[in-house]
Length: 264
Image 1 (spheres, rainbow, N blue to C red):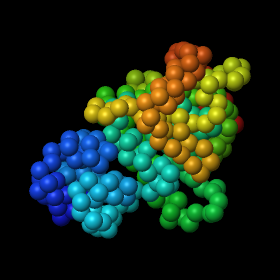
Image 2 (cartoon, one colour; image 1 turned 45 degrees about the horizontal axis):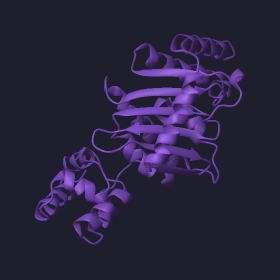
Image 3 (cartoon, helix red, strand yellow; image 1 turned 45 degrees about the vertical axis):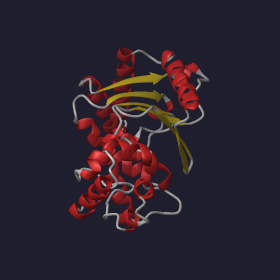
Image 4 (cartoon, rainbow, N blue to C red; image 1 turned 90 degrees about the vertical axis):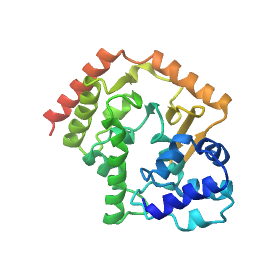
């Protein structure tokens, strides 16, 4: 990020007599996120910049002079993307396809390619790069703690074809075998379960209350109401209690990858 931008932000905060935590509270952000922005490790989203302008009474300066960012996410995911990068614990539930932070390049291209309206090759490339960049949070061996709860339909749908699916599922198995993530599968024999309506992400933080993010077709919503977050956490826990144990889940993942490999 531009040194001028981050230094100006810090100067405005200090001129207002605010600590990072006080600015974070006023802008409805986390202190760690403010710290990352001022250190140049992260670029604020457009919504972050608008909230910072309001909190610092700087008009639209931070919004208007936001540094160029190659990060490409759909609009309804912008707020959740910023939160994902700050979370110390993430629990994913996937109903239809593999969550973004676990996707391989081949799988991501298969998901992002056939869209409407059609994407140009350059835009598709940007979206794929962003999705792979999101996965870098898993390069830290400890944080965030990540759990994945996968409906078996995620494994059954051959997105990208057998070769892509075999590679994708093997990638998830490796993450689980390295103990970087914990994976459980909800078997198709279960029938109805309390998360069958949409995908769900639960996130916890060091310095703010937990949030949830749910997503459907071309829409997504960050839930920060304590009552709603608690309800969604409860639904997740209930579904998790019906999932296959870790050992059985990994056995199913390995068998499925092997089956796709035979059809390659």
